Length: 324
Image 1 (cartoon, helix red, strand yellow):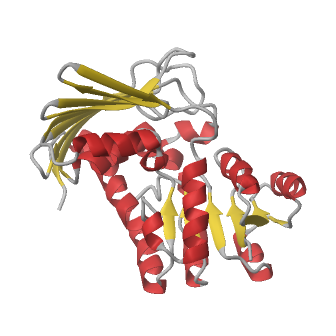
Image 2: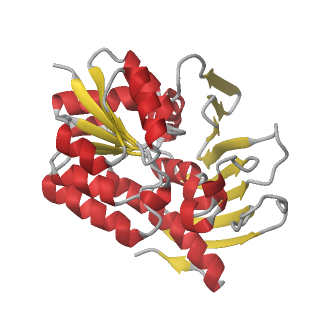
């Protein structure tokens, strides 16, 4: 029997997941919903499934094994809780919320209902990150340097703090999460940010440059730089880890370079969607009930959210934030 999948929100990133799922033999796109009814109907026609304008209506009318929630961050909470209360598996795009109260309410429902839940931290599923973890295994990490440098995304909601959370929370979160995945839990955060580069976008109220200094529970330190004020056509995202006798450079989602004394190994990624592996893993986890196939659980993603929110708190307070 195919895994019957519904979608809440079918714009933006949802299109990547829909395309992948349509090519996975044991996955079936069974229903979609979006608050913009015309968008839901267009996608429903494309994939030959019913379309709804609310998740409540979709959940009431459809028998689903899993639901993807791909709404903007400000809309998080009601759909995830409704899905989890029905015992349906969840895939949630990052970040999982804009505040820890909402995130923890969703988490509590997932854990109470024992629902399988995966979060879209795609770097965790890349072969290149697997190779990075292998190269770092058993070695003491000294410093982690990360960056997410890009121009401002086109979506109007993205440039509004109350809707996206800002670049650190919505975008650079991928780099923060990968740093945690490789170097372990974060102990303290101190950050600085400002509005320096983007002045001509209507409604924009987020900072466009930021720098975050982290200390990890292991004693390693990290620095992550962000900007959404780069010129169009120039951008860089990635992470470099300096450990005992090895330097590992994660080149965004395109490759990894592993430097050892006298030797350099480079692996490039090309071809299919970078989201394909996480979609395949989620479908397989739903099909088999094997939760270990999920590399970013909801609880884990809440810890990444806590780091990015602590960076914002550090900026506001002008002080070091200690995570409990």
